[in-house]
Length: 114
Image (cartoon, rainbow, N blue to C red; front, side, top):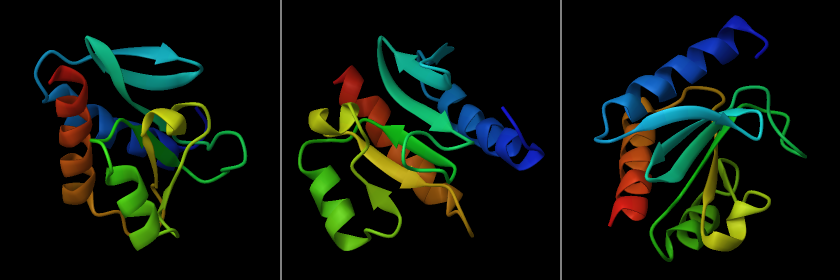
């Protein structure tokens, strides 16, 4: 991981995920990733593939991916590989609303533990 800003993003996501029940963390595909039985999130502080900006990818309940991408395509996107399973991508740039990110991660956790 590169910058101090990237490290700070990872720490914020780690703190949110660590508070969710049964969460473990390991590096998966080069990214800090969070599991509750199944993987539910990964943070990419240095970007990945065609997204060079820091972002989060995570599981989402059915239908939520399209809704978020339609409502705010500047911030939400369909990530490669896991997008086909309904996962969402969220840019972690600018003034990040960490309460919203905590809600998104909570829903991701619930999606894989339900």
